[in-house]
Image 1 (tube, one colour):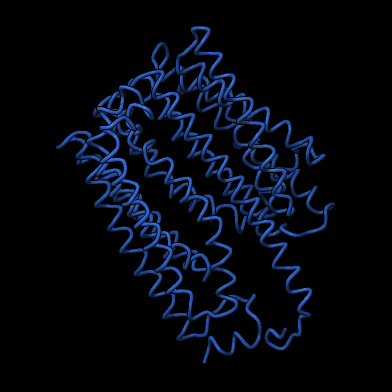
Image 2 (cartoon, rainbow, N blue to C red):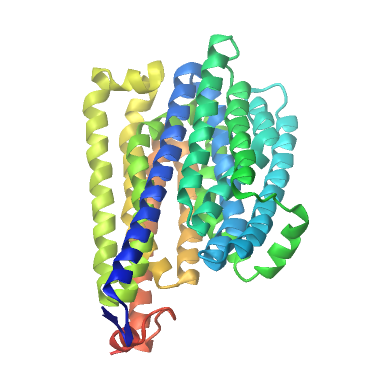
Length: 443
């Protein structure tokens, strides 16, 4: 087999394909069990606690999402970019620094969580943040181990780790309900403590301890990557986090619980969405190496396919929920969540429609353009959600946020179009392209 000016034996080519398929299968399996566990957790809490306590749980959960994106920007992204496929000794040193950095972020976030709990003491929100503050270091450390194992090419370790987390978490939640401890503090504590068990297991699997002393060196060594990915990752999550906070202050915890319940209903589709994301990102990078001109059509197919699947799942929900599916998934909370399914779907479909353009921007290395889209979209979503909440309540905040998200989708595709034009005019292509493909892309 010939690629550019290099000749690759066919046997070695098929070995590479098999290894890539092996890694991909473990990635999809791990993401599947992680997403399914989160979906079952949210559904169980919604059915058991009711709207107000589920609203407090939702605030803790979106705060965890913000913290985990910060950790991934500072610790995980540099690890994946610079230490994927390296020798085991090199990986061990890098993993110690990366996991130490994740632990530092978790401790800092945990302190903020405890401070928030003191600020809202003797309230349901305070209980949720107290449990989150106690367990956030373990939550972030467990997530960092998952990606560290994929960087080493041992995705099955991540699958085992997430499986253990689920195996510990589910019995704990059931035991809490049976023993009369069904409240938001104990449920968040059980969730986070289960992740802590996975974090400890990760160190055992890797034979590496997180190094807090190495975290400062890690941040200094990767200061060219860490801040950029920190801004992009947290910017993409800030819209959801701040939207939840402002909705709480305007409409109350019960409204946040109803809105989050509608998001839980889309959980089965989001398992597909996240799983497909793990496939399309490496496939897009490979397509750019093989045939750069096919990148844009591939991005369009990804967006159209995901958007259509989101709409189909919404149609299933709208038809089947009144016939028992709603009660099965959410208990009595489904009545309040049902009118919010349509605006939640419109909001989610906007993210699906933007998935392809985001994929293309990352494949082209257009980091400034992708960051610009993320930050502007987040600002639009937050402002629109606040206006909608003030004027039209729960449904209004979702419809306005969805409209802003679709505006961000248009902006994202325009930025991809500009990036592709710049690449074609100036011959700017990623440096990892093979020589003959570089010539073809510039022609």
